[in-house]
Image 1 (cartoon, one colour):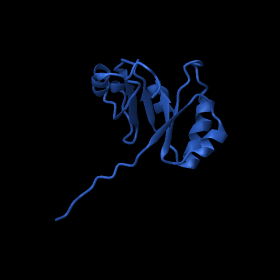
Image 2 (cartoon, one colour):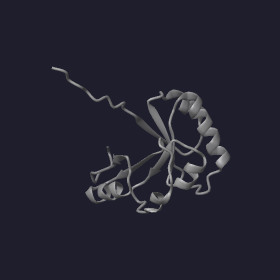
Image 3 (cartoon, helix red, strand yellow):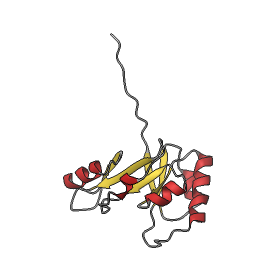
Length: 133
């Protein structure tokens, strides 16, 4: 009897808000970086391109949070859509084959929303009242 087993590589996701070479050097290539900076809404594209090139050399996937147009324009690996983003505009864009859309959800309603947004991977974030997890 032949048995087939599916292999799904485990990916860890590491959120950053600035380029810090020391921290990025400590992670392995099974870790993906998500640039999430809600303080500085106008992220400098030069800064993002530096992170992109560094990640490419290290074999690390690089995602941008909450800005699909910029992620497409900079040819990043994908975009992260946070739970508070209820927008469907990204469905109008043509995406390259390996462009990944990931997101987060806190409850069943948000999971259904992320499914409707065609998110390929969903993080289940803080489902409990105490945020010790």
